[in-house]
Image (cartoon, rainbow, N blue to C red):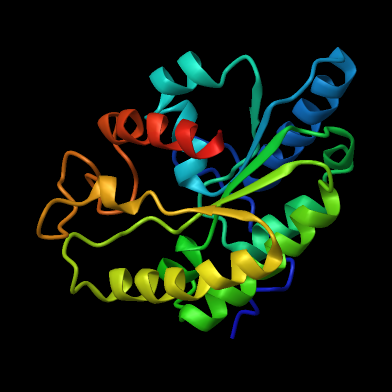
Length: 221
């Protein structure tokens, strides 16, 4: 059993688009230190897993247009809540960034990689919320509901995502953080995820990031 609330590290092996996990983490630590050294104000700190990481790849056009000059992205693909917790606890510069907003999307890998159910996912995300509130007391905290996955609505992973989001909404409210459900933009009228939106039934295409960008910007206002 994997405890979704316990900090944990990942094995070091190069994966798609990225070097090994600890190298990525150190790059993020260095990027945070450099931002602080620059003296610039940070508007947005993005944290999470591959869907957030890929803003700078599949979503590069939107990222460069909207976020490149005022935001840091310290997401790592494949992370579950425990991995993100470890990284938040082991980046000594985070507490000095003082971003205007922290934007987090996490939890899908708890479902797809770790085989966890909705109550475990919510426990892990709740632990992330607690750490974010401690690290960034003066920042707006924005948590996105877990995006749908699986092509059709009867997909088992989609069902766990939906169950998790139903439980996450009241948890976010009780925790005093802002939450945003953007999921309908990824679905057709039959609640199917079109291949042009998520080619692999999980990760967003460039056109999906183009759909998401204005919705996210409106939510952050």
